[in-house]
Image (cartoon, rainbow, N blue to C red; front, side):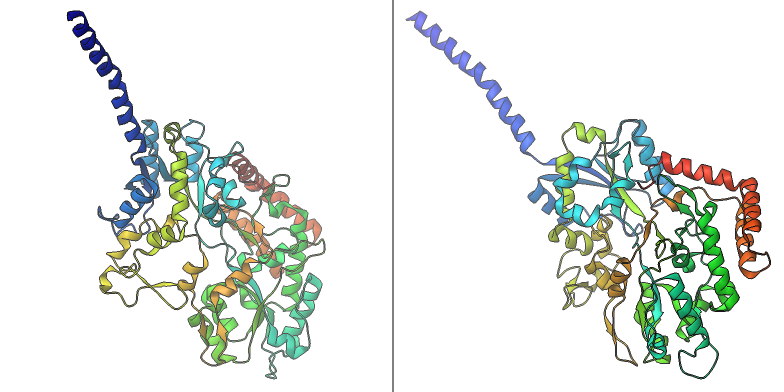
Length: 525
């Protein structure tokens, strides 16, 4: 009896001992099944507005639907301060799970093994990938053949076009030109054949002004379609097998000869060397020239188009294809793009969070996430107009509108969902009917057509080294003197000037730019 008693006690104890891991395992599974914490360092859409409040509905939706406990930290508004914060976290091996980072900082984190490659995530985010990550975007954050960042769209690209007065073409019985030779003929007709029928000698073929930047050197943005016909558009050739300054290419001389012909024949508005932006825009609205490169909203937005509509109710501009040169080249010009890069820390990848981050980002691209992060809660922060575009009208409490100080706190992550889609741009560029001619206009439709034309990818060219002040002055003054006739433009003089340009630092500028582009994976295949 005693023996049986002790056996029972032993069995009970053994069962109790065996059962302990079962309860322990159950606790572990609960931890795994519980919310996954994702630490996100983000760039605020409106830095002065403050972060989303603790009771923001987005936190609850993300936890309920995605099983993610989202922790937000706002990065400093100043880029230098952002860099310091991220690099300090990297030095302590304490980077957050997901964080916004500038490309040059990312380039330093990759060799240290502190960020995870993300190529495998694109197919796991089909909706987001389709709208956010095209080939240019993926290449922007590539190092050593792998993507280490998710580069979201920034500024609108390819938002300019080559426009021509169709009413002038019709008046003269001409067609839209397609080649450089045809363009010369049309510019001559626009200059000398009274295209507006007013009996005055007051029109020109082409209009421009000097708008120069790092990636569109002199003669600048407005004449890039001419340079594009000769294959020398932009400051830099960003193609891997021919990278370098376009001015060093033989074809640049050919483009200069063409520009000189335009100037000598007087078929380009001679004020282009003196015009400022406002002068240029006033001139086309006054009917001074019939061909130009212009930005979509500067041309077609309601307030910008109104003066032209009033002056010329029967006037009509149409968007041209890029002009083809003698060797078949054609381009409206180079385009670059700003991106907001989000990287995933290697630590987050080791903890198995990559797929969960992909799930979060894909949800952000869904209708629910897009509208919630972009505009807030419908009926509270926004309503929709007849076209389904969020507006700040008809709200119970106008102070909560997405456009107001309070509403802006709940849309601080909108830069993570916006991609310059039609809904965003309809709000910026609404359709309207012109006051005089009663034409329906849309700067958005103009933009979409401009973006279909032939452009040259040059992403990152705006980050390349710039010349020192003396070399820049020599560059711009020399080209201007060739066009105006202060220097005789012939092959011998051109070669002499190029040799001097190289000696003064042009060759060094070229070599540094190519080296930087190669080191930072900026060249196109």
